[in-house]
Amino acid sequence: DERGLGLLYFNIGVEIGQLAFVLVLLIIGEILARLLPRLFRHVQTGGAYLIGVAGAAWMIQRLFNIA
Image: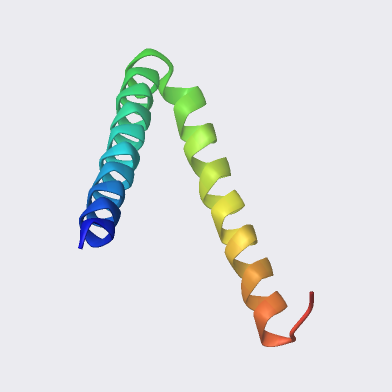
């Protein structure tokens, strides 16, 4: 069926797009780490805390069925 093939190609395209986005972020991160190592450490730490807070909030939301 052509729909199945179309869906497969769509999903492959989405995955390639995600990989390209991550690659760009990694390149930018490497450049920042080399040019501004102190600032990069702060950005890295802040990003880790942001991810942790978001994860904790989503976990609490799901545990207590908060909308």
